[in-house]
Image (tube, helix red, strand yellow):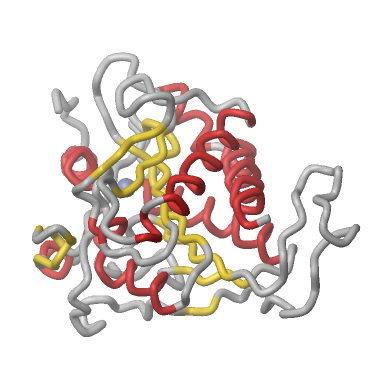
Length: 286
Ligand code: ZN
């Protein structure tokens, strides 16, 4: 928070992120989609999962190539953090919504940005779409929590509802953090803890570990400033608290760190994140 006085937007974003990037989600009470200009449940243009098409080569054994075989009919909800219109709709975004465990939190936040002004919502939108394409190519049905990067919200509780209503086999929220602590860098994966239901127990733990392992295997460094070995138990994240499906939230890195920002700001870097995330999700589903 020793924020360098950049554009006020950037400053606000930093605060927003410290307060909410880690806890970008909020809660359930489905306030009518009023605030959310965007409709939540858009079945991504992802090719519907041919319910019968067992992916890949040999019957049950994962193909020896990179991606493990995933049984047909799987549904994945991808939740790109924040939204492009949040910054200009503060009233809607600051509205308090239930966030689980009796907490109330703001509907959503603006997210953070790199020092050069590359905003988190754009990063998460881009990475999520790359992941979506890779999963869809494997016959997995992908549902996004927002249909574009120009809308407002949805609120965290509505985002959680998307995963619940889709009966998702996995829900993955994609974010980036914003910390001005010297040298702070690296990714971490957050999960609801203590778990509030069965899905938040072993299934979410496995999803979290698969994502952590996949990002590490792809060469991404674990966070130097949050969590332990890339894992971060959280009780304050609405999206995770309210989920009734296996869920995890990835903070891909620290946008205020030059190294992480460089990777996140490049197309190649975002593809590297997407490849690792998609592969980890497929490993989880296989
Ligand atoms: Zn965020």
